[in-house]
Structure formats: C-alpha cells, structure tokens
Length: 240
Image (cartoon, rainbow, N blue to C red; front, side, top):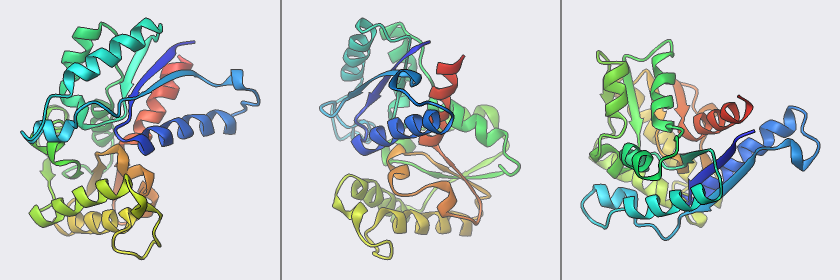
C-alpha cells in the first residue's frame, strides 16, 4: 500500500478535516483496527509564507518552503504527495520537478469533476485572492471547458470570501449559524451571489471552506468541494 504525504497547514483545520474524512471513509467501510487505515504523514506547514499573499504581491514566496517540506516527506519514504491548499497548486509543476515525486493534483481533479457535471456552462468560483490572481483554476478550466464562462464574486463579495476564510481560522466558526460572522453564513451568501450572477455550478476552491460549509448546505446548484475531492483522490490512490 502507498504511503501518502500531505503538505498541510493551509489551513490547519482544513488539513485536520481532510484526515478525518479519510479515517471516516475507512471506518464506515469496514476498518476495525488501526492497521486497516492508510499510512499518512501530514506536515502542518504553518511557518511557510502565505500562498495567497505571495500571489497578491504582498509577501515572500511559499515555494522554497514547500520544496523543503516535500523533500523531508521524501526522506520519510512517502510514495506520493498532495497539498491541502488550492492556491499552492500555482507551483505544482515546480514542486514536482524539485521534489521528484508524483503529486495528487487537487485542482486538476476538481476541474475534471466540473467537466463531468451535467451543468457547467457558467462556473462560479470561490477562492482566495491569490488563487484568482494566479489563475490557478483557469489553467485547467480553460483546457477542459474552453467554451464555459467563469463567474467571479464582485469586489465586495470577494472581500466577504476573504473574511469567511479568515473566520474559519478563528473562533468565529463556532458562532451560532445565524450569526453573520459565521463562515457558513458568509459562504451561503457568496453562493447566492454567484447563482444570482448566473452560475449553474460552483467550485468551493479553498479547502478552509469545508471546515464549516459543505455542498449539501446549498441546494440551489451543485457545489464541488475541493477538500472532498482531495479526500476521495487520496483514498483512491491508496486502494490502487
């Protein structure tokens, strides 16, 4: 069985939820002992510079830090690496070349899931400022769905996306669901904004979002959650 390496910490809660998703899958599918679960090495890369701030032109590059961590995981004999951060996929080709290990490409897999969806003409994208500025998703969506339109939040709503991501990382995610500062409330409003703008499918393109908001929380159109896609990909890779 393959040993999986996760470059996490982006964010910490999202990475922890990723591991919980994987554990729950195997437990619900017959695991009754620790040895029935995948061998995973998770590195919470909390001291690496912000991926989004780098792509916004407001901070140092995260790439050297990710290369260093990837090489540490390689020394621990992992067979394949993934990253629990959409924005970090801006540098996935550089990382693969420098670390010399295969990567699970979460963004590519999300784009392929959009491709296979019944409705995908107008794709709403919820992502960090850096992910949008770095055109991380556009690379794949333009390849697989060249005739589709990507719908972005307007400036005010994008600032709410940033607030929601930040509030995942603090105690606001524990507020009452009706509180306007609760991330779930924020992302419900963002989804409504995107559907009002014509989106017939939405990408939840920041793994932090899944800590407090999942596709089943929004019924108007299909929402593809990137963290869920990554969890499924890790499970599939392990079971090959």
